[in-house]
Image 1 (spheres, rainbow, N blue to C red):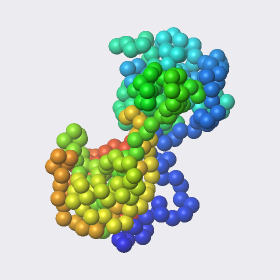
Image 2: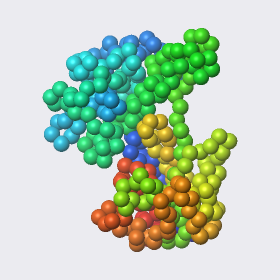
Image 3: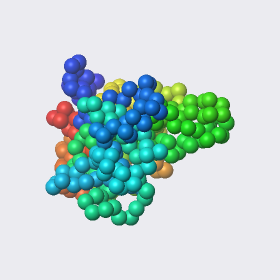
Length: 316
């Protein structure tokens, strides 16, 4: 096994949770989702201490105070913006403060003092604190799930929101529907002091990233890593090690980050998936992480960046 896999600090017992360094991972809410009811949602809307995340056409509504943006609004502020309380949901509680999420009627221009910014741009800007970024992602994942699951998959009847928004139920056949998430394996393949990265046609110019793919039914995480790397790059994998995970609210994905040790090195690229795929030396990776040259890695908000950064730090 390569020195990287022997030295990697994420394999040592007692280390900090690596997932906490990933965007959307700082969610501190107490959810109590198993014990919620419609009454709990109604009580939250009546609680003067409640705070609300609002979304305008899918983009979080923000209010700036100097250089810092705020994404939690009082009920009075939410009312002034015309939020949809009926479609709103309960996210959880923090320091005895209920936190909710709701859409507003779509508008091209918000009132003075407010703005809306798509979630990706918001995270890249760094204007919103990590805890609010995480709960904003949480809120949008649930709201979009409700939007896309209005009808029962069993009998086709209209479903109803229950458990304060954490489930839906069909009144006709009584089937309960739970919020879904799509697990995705994302992996950095390592061969000694170099790593494998690829790029898809829609990537920013010069950007290379880890390989990734959805985990299929009946498949382990390790199996998905080996299959995806073989399919996309023709590389055989031996050891697979978990690093961290990242909720990814586009709209409801869980990115599961791994390192994979290459058992072969000749690339056979799937041209239907990738525009390019190649090995990068540690020195090249270091220059890419600075994003000050033509070739670059994804920004720090992405779990791919954390995998690449860890490889660079540990393999030196």
